[in-house]
Image (cartoon, rainbow, N blue to C red):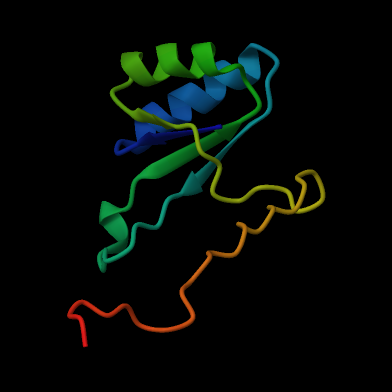
Length: 98
């Protein structure tokens, strides 16, 4: 799970708290699409802590929780099943009678 913060001090405080509680946590700079200024990028805290614990820390330190992992491990998930083919007509439909 990832928690996103705009303030570096808040992100570092969350990492310190998670590590003190025995969870793995690391801090990364989150690059947003369209942002040119490196100073405006938010901070991402990646952790294996339970979701409810991250929710409490996010509420306390004014951030948000990104529950969808953008970088899944390729070996752990099954390949997606392609959708069934759509039944298309063989010829155009006539709207007027000949």
